[in-house]
Amino acid sequence: MTDIAIGIDIGGTNTFFSCIDASGKSWGNASIPTQEQERFEDFLNDLCNLIEKTINDSSEDLKLIGVGIGAPNGNYRTGTIENAANLRWKGELELVKMVEEQLQVPVKLTNDANAAALGERMFGGAKGMNDFMVITLGTGLGSGIVVNGDLLYGHDGFAGEVGHIIMRPEGRECGCGRRGCLETYVSATGVKRTAYKMLAKHLGDSSLRAIPFDELTAKMVADAANKGDLLAMEVFAYTGKMLGEALANVASVTSPEAIFFFGGLAKAGELLFEPVREAMEKNLLFLYKNKISLLPSELGDDAAVLGAAALIWNDLN
Image (cartoon, rainbow, N blue to C red; front, side):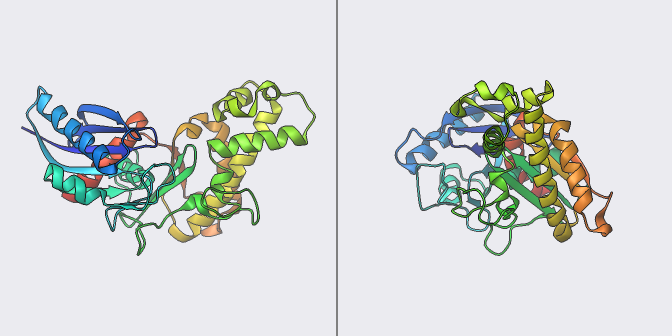
């Protein structure tokens, strides 16, 4: 019999889960649309039924020992999702309590970036590290911070929001309701906004000028930069500088051994890493200079479900 933890990643469009053993191997996975059901209870019922079916249909004899969930605005302390902007169900959703009632195993919840940090420590490049950070670079900017071997949650469960450090007072509008947050500059959405600002500011040739705003993606900007498009290169230089300055500030508080980058924007590689590294080292307090590694995540495309399952395996190790 193989003990497995279910790792669940609740996204705005789809919800994925995988049966993960203690080594990080998957013994089965599936997904359902997140937003089809009007009632949250019906969504969870469909999800739990599919989990049970996946376990029962497996050729391996699987024993479910717990469920870990990564979700937007997932609160580790309360077990609830609290007013997630990209979910149709509002208010406080008692996710942990409801899943425990249906599956009769321990259930733990956190946000997706915290889950990614746990996954990196158990199954990725942060094995053996007690102080590190994971920055998720997607539509927004998430962060999971591990200090002395434990995730940083704060008294209310929502600590570690690096993406909402204000970098430019009265700057760009952010979905959180404030202005100038790091996320509005350093994210796939931020890269797109920066590209159009620079296109308006400069008259030089750029392949990006022919792309309508609604169709432009951060990957297009990265591809253009890798082909030598000067404006696209300037976009990434600006984005990397902003992130490097922010990380230099965060390092003064947490002193991480390494910072791991995960997500679509991180796939730009040295196009992003180089300006981040340069700006961070330039702005670091002398005590921390040349001590912090900037590394790509080693978790790959399964990062979200591996991280969620690590919520369970972490408590057993």
